[in-house]
Length: 516
Image (cartoon, rainbow, N blue to C red; front, side):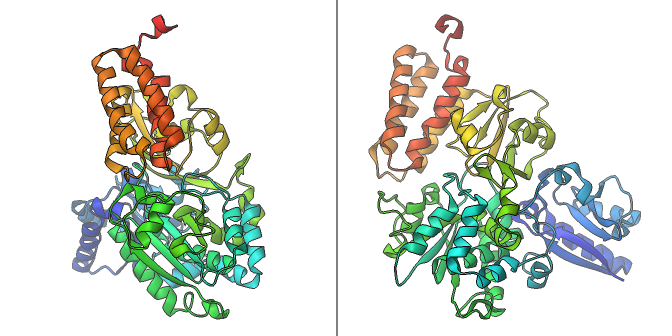
């Protein structure tokens, strides 16, 4: 009987040598005459253990990592293909605390299955949500999504069901589903992991959305830095179409839905929904003025549902298990779970899916293991490069949309980048403005010009030139960008700047004792 061995094919694991490890296992097994069945799975999201190799045993999968090609002969000597002990062994994968304490709903299959195997997907509950949606009236599907409390996971947190209902109620001969997979925030990777590790989940979610609002065509807009995800999605769509899950009659229901993947050209601004629509239409990616809303007049002027990967990937479970099941996770108006992405100065970086209400301290210390440098954590930027810096004194605030807004922060896409006490927050504030200079589409003046002036003003503050006057000027400039920018790019760039000034004034040369 062959030993079944899982080696991830996720691009994060590949960057750490997973392909070479898989080849080394094959060579060593052949040389020893040992029968092995190597399955390429998605990443489990434990990045410090990648490449994480798993071996199937009667007790469950046993984890070994991080495995390098030169470790393979020793692993075979120890009998790892039977789940035997070895210094790289971490016991049963499911019992590793980083995984065991999670609440994986959207990522339930990622790491367990062969991403392109339809049989594997079906064996793990795949397409149950779509089958349920086909049996319901479109308005009932929209109502189920509304009742679940799902809000957009891209950052704006707009109720997904309300967006769908707007498109459903807008008459048009052609409607679209557009998936925003332009995951450009620093420290984020959940979209990529899902597209590479469980692509059928996204395909199923988009198909449900199409049937619910009457759209027959969908597009997945993938950032150019994700070529592996692009290829995986293309292959998965081809297989889903061949099996009848996409096409002129989805699963034989008589209703059509088609899907294409489009690759962006590498602009951060195309993560903004209207800039993405421009790019999908073959134009330069610049933001559109609103109204009209894309739900009324979006792609090619037609009603369009725009959701990000995590929003659409949550939908199959909601239909399969019911709105109440999903809504039972979370707190307040933040329902369900969010895949948090731990990055920066942490011992254990990776993906942690938890219900809303978990605190930053739990994520950084219990899951992240504290700083990799061993020094105290000073702050974490939550929500991407436009998110606020949360100081250690606020690490115990529950992560939900409203409580984070109350402290001047945002949850965003769930990206968390940690910094220890050596970080210079004045330089980080300057970086925020410089990022806007580089990534602004240039359409509106507050963003295009304001960010350039912001870098100049912060440079003068750091140099100690007329500090009081320049601090007042920076404050006024941030107000102008917040109120006058056309989209979140310029409108949110002040968040990291203002939070750095508020919580770490000493880094800007401000005498807090004198100010008091």
